[in-house]
Image (tube, rainbow, N blue to C red):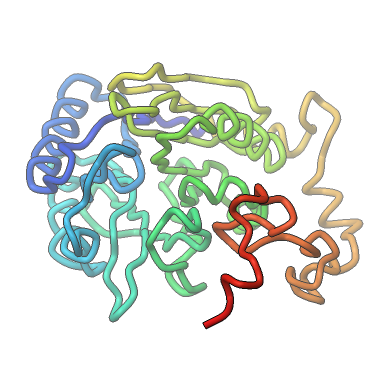
Length: 316
């Protein structure tokens, strides 16, 4: 018997700056999906959806992120769990701002049909310098969970697609499907779509990648198969991308090879490469770092002359 599951990548928009109204909308969407698509059992929502984050034109009140952050587990995750239990579905509620002492993490959360919080992932690589959340520590990150009779699912978030170590680690932990909530409102979304497909190909797994819809610059969510084929792709509005995926396809591709040729996991097992120098010496030691400007800035020799500081500017 094949290991199939019906999935939804929810390309939806929040009620910007109104978490209460957004949660009410989320609950309606979940109940509607459960009532009208009973054969679909896993729902995945976008990054920071329940935190009601907007787009580039949103003016945030002072202290907004901390005001909407919640402990995990906490009152917000309790409500999500109650909703999952009500409809009897697996729900990845995108990510939320998680407060942990004096730190704020961007944390993806997954719930079982019994309402249990089964996995979380604190974003290890936030989109710096634009994202204010703190990088997650190893504890509480790279979460995976098993759906009985189906297989293992892993969590990562948006910008982490640019770092192949993240999906590689999830696949190494046994993930056959990577769930990647996303919030992208910028012109690099077509590049992200390439990365989603590339990560699926490199790790021979499915990837569900829901983005916001109907908000400036968003949309183009994806469901991608283990050979990088597009199973479903969103437009720019709100919509539910639906599919039935078969995790036996992952096993087949990993066993026989992508296009019947490439079996990288067998090679990593039987002919592992030596330890790569960037892991031994540290990323900062690499020659590529020479001359790079600061994070969020530009190297001085590449800046327009009119914006470069002068010797006089540094004097008091």
